[in-house]
Image (cartoon, rainbow, N blue to C red; front, side, top):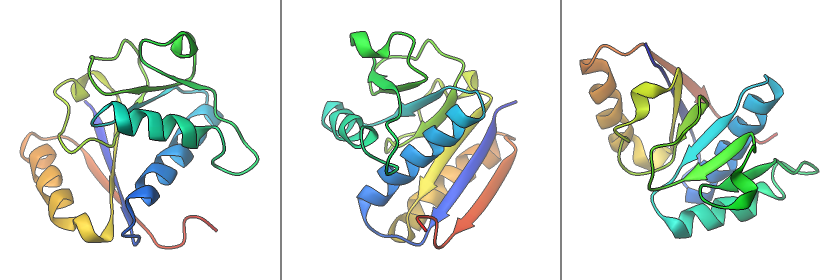
Length: 143
């Protein structure tokens, strides 16, 4: 059954979610896993693509957007439309819970301090369907 991890950040800036997603992707690669970063649309996919070239500092994370040549064989894939063809960790950055999430062993949901209500709604959704839930309260995660 899919494990759902909620990462509760004290930040309120939307870019903090993207930076934290980059860190999760780097951590997955370090553990020998792949990561699928699910975003809402093409604009967000391009923004995240750009960020992954330079964040975390001094480390470029090999990645690509679904449908591009860079995505072939990359350990980190960014997508927003299609059901991914990967057995990666899913980092959900979209506003909706993607219907394909049960295909993944792990799902990461990143919740900002000013989006707690949205986080609670997602938590209840997963809880009501019996998924194992874990939460991580993070205050100074960028240090």
